[in-house]
Amino acid sequence: MSDLTNSNQKHPKLSSFALRKIILTMVTAKLRWRRIEEFREECREYIIKWAKINEVIRLQILDGLDEAIFELKRWTEKHTQIFPEEENLAIRKAALRQKAQSLDCSKTNTTSLYKPQRTAMRILEKSEYLRIFYDCLIWEKTMIKINDFATAKNIVESQCKNWSQLKFQFACCYAMEELLEDERIFDKNRRRAFKKKLDNHPIYHFWLRVLADRQEWTKLYRSDRLIVDQRLMLAFKFAINNGFIELVKRLWDGLSEGQMEAIGFLCWKKVCFNLQHPEMVRFLCTVLCRINKRGMAQMSWNNFYHKTYQTLDVEGLSRDERLERFKKLECLLENWCDPLRKIILSRENFRVFTDSVYYNRPDSFLLFLDYLEDSKHLINGAKKEVDRIYERKKDKKNVQFFRQQLIRRQTANE
Image (tube, rainbow, N blue to C red; front, side, top):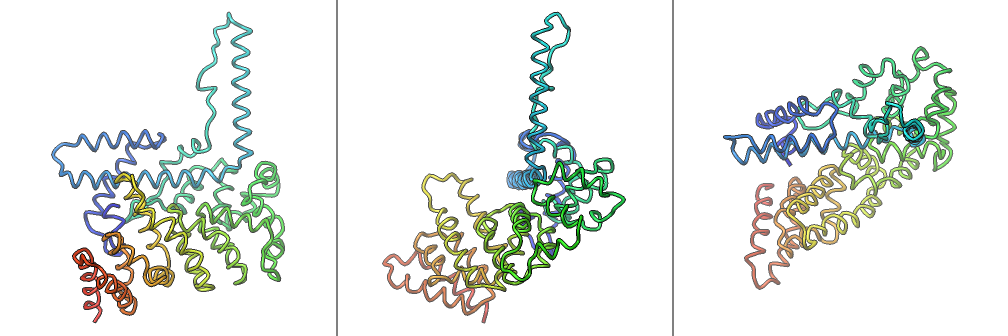
């Protein structure tokens, strides 16, 4: 990861600002409406050819470029979900009909000057539509990260003045309630037209119902039951799994504590190990740990230990694959709330610490230790377990490094 994401957000380094400026200047100048992989390859070649540049700085710029590419792919993948599958199929069928007509014309009228054009036969993927909005992306001021909500507002205001359906889709997915309730923009006739095209999508179905009748809010939440209405549940699952945090927070307000737990636990396993939606992970972790901390720990431990931590030791991994898995581990710990982190790191007699000692993993050991720094009790517990290994080991040199790190943290807290 670049210095930019590792730096303290309150006091980012000047070098971080410079790196961000370099990367976003390339994005502005070279991306436009092009495919992301084409943009990536051109930028990498361009950076590699730079003369008289320190290799460390070159690698930092390449890492920064990878972060920008990750963000562009994340944003594109997230927003392909706003297009209903049925609408996309209709576009594909229309393109196929156009292709068939072109071929028929070329067979029956061989003397005609008309020839079917390859561009007319091309069937666009959903992600292709989104390339026209790359110029509208709003980036965070101190990070190489897209601000999704600000970008959505920018697209709605600058690109959708005469594109009411897409304006409605963005407004629904980002819970722009004031815009949705504006009868001058989305009157009954227009909503009726949207219903024919968009009603099979869970988010648009939900909003079309509540906009038509405000009493539907009460009916969908069903406060007398543990489980909300199925249509609201589908809307929650879509919003949580695809990272629409603004919509989740808006819908979350009407839930009882039992409903929060039921919906959150249902979606937690899938979303908590997804690097694409860290804000959603932080939100759900904070809320669910407040309701049922023990249940969260039980649910998270197995996936954390077996599916993430232990994969660091898989044989045959390349350096890039190992770094990617370590980054996933780092991202998990960064986005979990502090109570859950400490429960997981101290679970089963500090198993992640003792495994790091047994398998000689200093990187993961130091990462875990950073998250215990403010807890003298937990550092003492981890040292106690490492001391037991030290006493049993014949070759004490490998263990000595880990003990010294714990002793330093102990003395720093005194």
